[in-house]
Length: 182
Image (cartoon, rainbow, N blue to C red; front, top):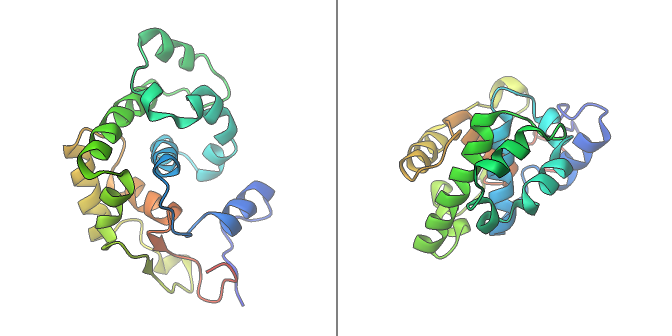
């Protein structure tokens, strides 16, 4: 058996790999958290964001979209001073816009889960990679998701970020063939 090697020996990364990554997620609140965290990952390593996840939860009201959607300029500036998170003003503002867009999508579709899983037909796409070279950074499904999210007002949701989100939420399973956590 060959487990995925990307977590390395980092305990937090290993726990994330073993317990979250690639496991189908249908909880709206957690899906929104993943969407926000993946948008902060743009241009950074997942390790950086994962190690700040608890700080993000505190700073962003435990990812309560209803609260984040109402953040004003004072709150944005407060977040810019928080050394525990990624202090990128565009990404912070995107989190607010994404909370607003998320609430609209949830209202339209009845749940964010119902909306987001349509991009894989409601099923996990099971890939069987044997090396990192076989794992794409984006697909036609992530392209379609990105295009639709942007149309609906989401920010920092390019196709590569959408594919990372799909992996995190278990919409795509890219665990190595033979990984004990596949």
